[in-house]
Length: 127
Image 1 (cartoon, rainbow, N blue to C red):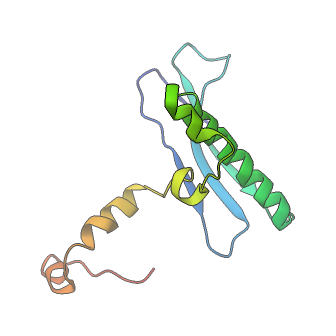
Image 2 (image 1 turned 90 degrees about the vertical axis):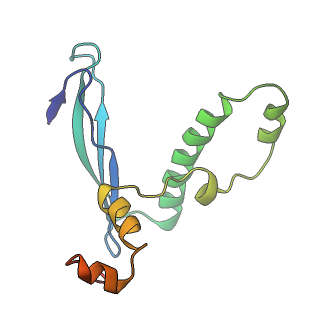
């Protein structure tokens, strides 16, 4: 486990592989044993092999509840009404889309035609 000193950049990424019951999360966490501003860089593997669909839904809902509370505490006045007994669409409102460096590069490369990419010596594959 690497210790990140104050000001060092951390890695935050969630890796979900199709067909796998394991999710890998990279995150930085503060800890009382560290100096103020320092964090540990963690890599956690969450194994959902023996989880039922209901258990997975509960875990997802807990994440969404925390994310929605973060949004809730930032609003005031008339905006508070929008949080009353409403439905939150998790996919659109709460669950972040992957933004790894590779996916950002791929998104930019997709603006080019295959011919333009070939001129640059780049060939995109399905994987």
